[in-house]
Length: 456
Image (tube, rainbow, N blue to C red; front, side, top):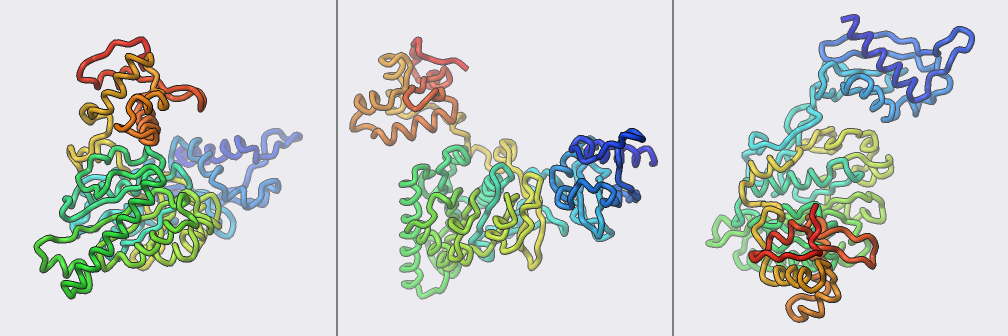
């Protein structure tokens, strides 16, 4: 036991020395180290430190996430907390892979990695598992209570993965007659693996014009449903479905980046959908990596009452999403802060990987790389590039050759998609061409040999 405590304490000191926070003692040798008292609990060790001995280190630096991550690395990957408790306490978990929500007898373990499995799917219709918090599983009712969701946070900390977990759960539980999806993916890469879902109401929108059209079409569907409900003299879509031969499926509109529409009429339409959609079976989920007041203004926040924040760059960004600070202190991927069930909760959200998609969706959502072949026009484009352009996918030349079959804008979009899939090489600069890769050439039903094919 004592050796274990010494090991963790040595990790704390190595981290402080690595950060350059320990002052050398020229006369006595070594370093000035903080005085500490150690406490051992079944699942973690706590060191109460005296910060005053380290006069060169401010309180803010002691509480920084850099210190926590540095100690964790030195401690062999064990999770670490640095908390201000009338002085300073450093806690080192004795169980790798688990974290504590708080220090004390009421603490409850929360996983740091939560793969999405069938066991996590709630039984209730349109309910999804957000993840696990201090009190256990946390669920969201996408069809009712949590039908309008704002999701924000710094890139790379779980926002898009969370959105994917929601749509995968809904698609796994509900067929196209019960659930339809509208996906806006301007970045072209986050949702391409779902382009074959039968639940898609429209093809995934990538270009801004396509995204704007999809939002307007969804508003048109709301107006159509309003007329149906008025004709049936019922107040909401659930009652309409109870007596109708053709039921209305829940529609979830997902906007991956709200900043693309900030200050535009399209954002106004999006807010109107969020405000009016509940009665008509239309839910909205809006994500952003830029949680500023210019993107998320008062109207947006008021009509997206369920707020979920992953790590933010500052407490002001946290306040934009949650109306409170705290999200800037989140350091683990997939960890979010939200107000669900009448309480503020820190939740580890579900992680979606290829195995989870396959287990939950089967063959419904194949990656573009897994889909069979090319359509007729795409095959002819590739064939012409190989035989006439030495493998170069030159948009202007192809647009001239295939005028009437495909537009220049569609070609540019196709080129970007194929580049992301690895079917075309990247551009060295804006003026250079992309080249057909061997993987794309192999998709032709009649193979073509050409010097321009690039192997990877």
